[in-house]
Amino acid sequence: MFKRLTIVTALFLLAGCQATYFNAMEKVGFHKRDILVSRVENVRDDQVEVKDQFSSALDRFIQELNFDGGDLQDVYQALNSEYEDSLSRAEDLSESINKVESVADALFDEWNDELAQYSSVSLRQQSASQLRKTKAHYKKMHQSMLLAESKMTPVLESMYDKVLFLKHNLNAQAIASLKGEFGSLKRDIGRLIVDMEKSIQAADQFMATMQK
Image (cartoon, rainbow, N blue to C red):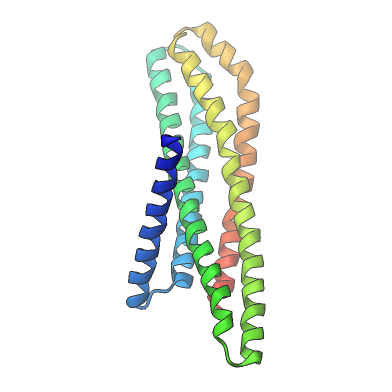
């Protein structure tokens, strides 16, 4: 019970901090719409870095699993480094997506509440129509973001399994075993890269609609 109350309290504090931040930014002329575009751009940039990092990890796994003599400890360290870098990039991306979600929720709530403030029926209807369109564009982009994000988990789990196995089995037989497991990792990284590219494109399209 105490843990649940602590989590709820933390969420309320976070919401309060976000509201304070948004209010402070508006005072200097940077509104929620601008913040949303900026945070979507950050996600797009993080997605590019994730795609590049996982591509690099795939290349390194291919290289190291073609082991032909040398120090197997170096092989382990190289693959573990790629895993750690991939995990770090993935965590950065997930954090950026969370920030997009928080400002999008705040923007749409504010926009919807302010519709009641119009005295002009025509302008209220136009604003309501634009809100629906913007939410639809956002939903499409957000779903693409979440799909690409979801593809990171199986890749990271597969990479970790292989690194962990190699850590305790530094021999040529272990390399041979990992080669037999490598096909699924290669496929998962391929799917991840395809979905990241689609999500990057969706982010660019959303930003273009917001800046018209």
